[in-house]
Amino acid sequence: MPAWGPVAERLVSRATGGLSAAALTVPTAYGSRALSGPRLSELLAAGRRLWEEVETGAEPSSGAPAVQDKVRQGLEALQRAAAMVAQLDLFSENEELEEIASADLKYLLLPALLGALTLKQVDLSRRLEHLESARAHFWRFLKLCRSYGLGSFHLPPAAASPPGEEDAGSPCPGGPAAAQPSLVAMASSRQAKIERYKQKKELENRLASMRTFVEGGQADEDQIREFYILQIQKWINTSLEEIESIDQEMVILRSRAPPHGTSRQARTPLKPFILTRDAAQAKVFGAGYPGLPTMTVDDWYEQRRRQGVVAGQTITDEELQKQQQEKKEEEDDEEALQKARNWDDWKDTHPRGYGNRQNVG
Image 1 (cartoon, rainbow, N blue to C red):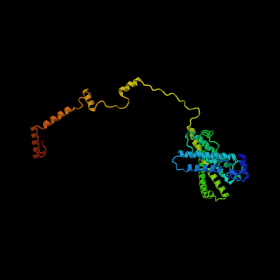
Image 2 (cartoon, rainbow, N blue to C red):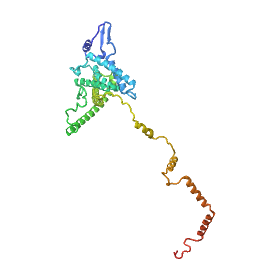
Image 3 (tube, rainbow, N blue to C red):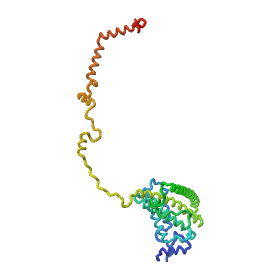
Image 4 (cartoon, rainbow, N blue to C red):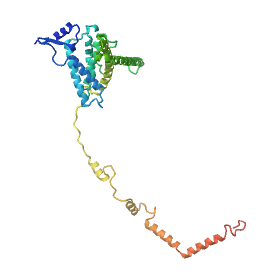
């Protein structure tokens, strides 16, 4: 049974007049057999299905074990598919879009899908590494689309600029010369986002109307080709948005991370020490918080009275009781009571002013 290498597989694909890589078979003495392992189309379909499940899943958190397991499986499938595409040399920057078979156009999405699934990883300790890897996948996809003339867009830099370098040589941020360009750039960026959003919605509507025919096998080759090109254009807008978000997040992560070589050395912790004077003072005045009472308020007042601090300012309970007893005895005196009654009777029979002649006393 002969062994077929990547070059031979590429030649077979060329010789079949644009036969898709998914349908590539190897002739043998016993007929024809498919290449060993999963087919390229199966790997792409599996990776895309897992990405859609992660994107539209009902899991409460993207860090759930079930979600991360799908992310890992999807990345493995897409990485194997990307390796097969590289071995078959399906795409080249020296080719035109018309030279690509309609069934092979969908494999252009492999870098974009790899970038989208890479962003779904939630390992915070490797977040910066995942962002750099995802950005590289998106940029590779955009560069490939640019070489085939798919869409008109500005290709971002190959790598995000470290913080501080993008502003090097520019005027002072607070100066009027720098304020005007920044406003123009912000307005231009906002307008570009609006245009991308409108284009994305239009592409989604067109794809939704064509998906049933293409997936049901009722579309001809021209419709299939248009469907895949629309998908590529949609992912171009998605990749541009993701690269912009990745650059912003990388700036934040790099500003938080300590520079290399400037990490603080772990110093030996200081031993606690106690001042003898403070220890003695704490025994007298306590530890700085209220303690339990040692006497009642009445005991304290009696102690102060015996010391003469509050003498003459008030009377004791015994003296008060004595005064009340004397008052009660006075009220019980019969002579005094009779005198008071007589005086009341006299006031009843003699009106006020009685005996006063013309107000003369």
